[in-house]
Every structure is written in C-alpha cells, then in structure tokens.
Image (spheres, helix red, strand yellow):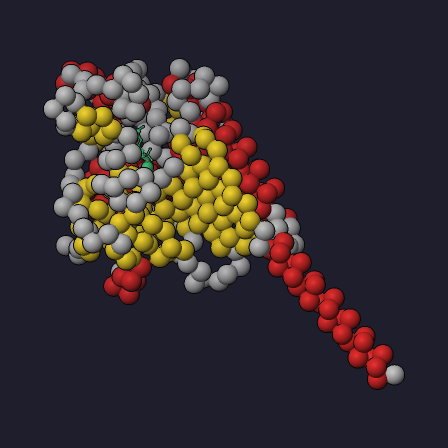
Length: 347
Ligand code: ADP
Ligand code: MG
C-alpha cells in the first residue's frame, strides 16, 4: 500500500515536472524576424507563447502603415494623396496629424511636419543630393508651418508637402505596441518580452515583470561604425528614438557634411552643437518627433519640451560630452563604454 502511494506521488511529481518544463519551453519561445519597411530595417524580437503570431501581425501592420498611410513616395498612401490635393482624411491620419501639429507648436516649429518640399530640395540620401540656392530654400520653407488640421479636414498651402520621415518609425513602434497589447488580452499563456526596432526607434516591453523591469540598450557612437556603441542605457520599458547627423548625409567637394535633419527656421541642416539625441518617452511618436526637435533645438531649448512630454534625453555634443536629463537618483542609468566620451552635466 505504502509502495503504491509512493509510486503515485512519484508519477504526479514527474508529470508536474514535465508540465513545468513544457510550459517554460513555450513561454520562453522566441522569434527574431527582420524585414525592410520605411526605408529602414525593422527587427522584431519577441519572447512568449504567441511570439510568431504577434510578429506576423506586426509585420503586416507596419508594411501597411508605410504603404497605405505615411509614405511620401508611394502613390497608394494617404499622405501622398494629401500632398496631391486631397483634403478629407481618415480618422487614423487625422489623429496623427493633430498630435503632430501640437508637437510643432510645443517645439516652436523645430519639429515641422510640413518640411517635405525642403527635404525634396536637398535630396539627402538620394543620388540627387545637392546644396540648394538661398532662393530655393526660402521658397521651400516659406509656408512649411502653415498647414493645418481641423477634425478630418486638412489644409496644405501651395508648395507645401507633408513629410512623416521624422515620426513614421516611432508611430510604427506604437502600432506594434497596440498589437502586442491585444495579444495580452486575448491569450492565457502569453508574451514575456519584446524589443521592436524600427530604424532609430526601439520599443521595449516586459509583460508582467513589474515596474522595475529594465533593459540595457546601447547608444550608437555617432562617430563610429553602425554597430559601435559609446554608452549603455539601463532603462524601463518605453520607447527610445535617436536622431543623429550620421544617419543620412552627403559631403560637398570640400568635404563639408550636410545631414538630413533641418532647422526649419534656416532651411539648412541643424547645427546646434550636437552629434545625436536619444529621447526616452512612453510613446514612439513622441520619442521620434522629440528626438528630431531636440536635435534642432540644442540642449538648453529642449528642456521645456522634454518636460512637457514627460520625456528624458541623452545628448551627445560635438565635443564628445554625453549629457542626460535623468535626475540625480537615476544617474546610474547610463554607463560610458567608449572612453573617448565623458559624462557632462546639465547647465
Ligand atoms: P531618421 O529618419 O534618421 O530616424 P529623424 O527621426 O530625425 O531621423 O528624421 C529625419 C527625417 O525627418 C528627415 O529625413 C526628413 O525627412 C524629416 N525632417 C528633417 N528635419 C525635420 C524637422 N525639423 N522636422 C520634421 N521633420 C524633419
Ligand atoms: Mg525622429
């Protein structure tokens, strides 16, 4: 009798152990996929039972977001239609444009979604890149900030074109986040962790790990090669975006570099003493738009904007100082990994 009981207990323990191993196997299932959209590489690294299904859905949504909504060059996109005269837009685009108009105002025009004609004129990243004449620049920026959105009606002055280049990747991160959240509410056994990378924007999520869950993310060395970091940031889940002068540029015959982030007040590549800005915010559209705006504004003028959006930033200056807005208690969030750089203080 005693022997039977012991056998029974042993069988139950073995079954429980197998169940734990199988559950753990499924929960730790991981998928790593990458594809090209929005002129950049998108990488999906998702851990959890539904990882493959989630990755498939995210891929098709990001491709659709690019082709049908935000692309400036695809004739099937809504932005293309707006730039060609369409005035009534979908609720989806109306919401995006309303949020962007607000960031334009809050950044005093440093972020400007109406900069498309200027981007086309410089052509940076294309084989037609050139330094335009002052008259051409003046014409391209004259009414760039005069576009408006009221409900679903958009007004675009003659000669102005909307350009989602500075926010599309962050918006893609927000779309991915929505899909992941959907999976969480649908399934019982679920996702554990995800890192969604769309060019310079990265959305980090840990599910069910509590408020202290953190990620280590490398910040690219703006003077180094693609995979070289100069610092590592230890941060909570959220979205981070980096804008830097190394991403797309051309050099003239004298070796002078012209990059792709423009100061809308001059119509020329921004020159605010920075090599890059990384912004950490809850939403991707905010981190992406603000990284561009802060790159234009420089450190001091960025601070009220960051505060308004409850965002933080890591600035890398042209003299290789790394300056963050993280408070004193969190100053251990960043560690320098390349000793050519040093940690500086906010003045
Ligand atoms: P990346 O595209 O390299 O991630 P950004 O997010 O900073 O970098 O976006 C730069 C792109 O945004 C440019 O290629 C251009 O299309 C557009 N852009 C450039 N300057 C501005 C600006 N001041 N405001 C809004 N969009 C801009
Ligand atoms: Mg940006």
